[in-house]
Image (cartoon, rainbow, N blue to C red; front, side, top):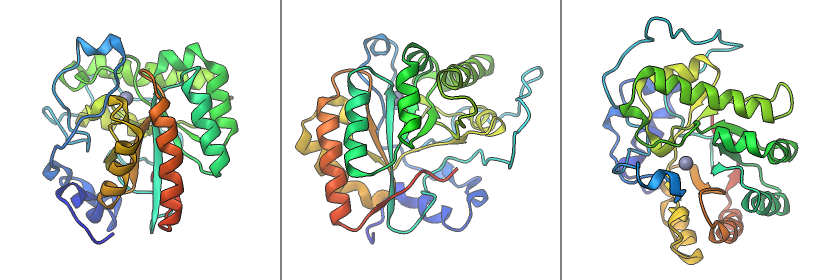
Length: 276
Ligand SMILES: [Zn+2]
């Protein structure tokens, strides 16, 4: 992993300590957007948000009357995670925008066959609609991530009350679909549309803000070969890799995921979860 890019900056710095990230992520370079072709968001989706989670908007504390719930255990950093728990030569696969009745089971089958665990960033209403899929994801040993209620990639431009509703209502929906007491250790803003407020809110509710380092752009359906090549080319950028199991036809994603896992194994990569 010798190749460094601008996007790698805070990954390198993060190795020195999570809390040291404060004030550093503002140097992040925006390169791409994350999204899906879910029809409901096409009309409302704005230009690319910073996928690395560049803090946007005016820094602000918690607004009056919006005090987050008590932190259940150890404090969670509000800085965006771009590391794996295991560190070293590992990656963290993250699967966004599900669960979906067609693509989530196929994604799970690929991961099960490979013996690899991933993190599923779920949209609240879909978790509510498909609780059995949420339970299957958990039963297979994967982790859950809150990916908001409406996948509004411009939510960083909205009020704190709106952001709070998007973050916490989705968390509740996912929790109610999952087996009792299943943790939701991450929050990933749609399109990386984090704000200082939403990051603090997520952290105060036990969810580490989760970024990504490799955007496969699989949701654009560029072809399986292109998706695989993107992973090969960009894995040096950092360990958190973004795939999708929702938002449209994800057949390319499923096939590419299997090929990417095989290639990563050949290259000596292990698989871990994002650092919480
Ligand atoms: Zn998404």
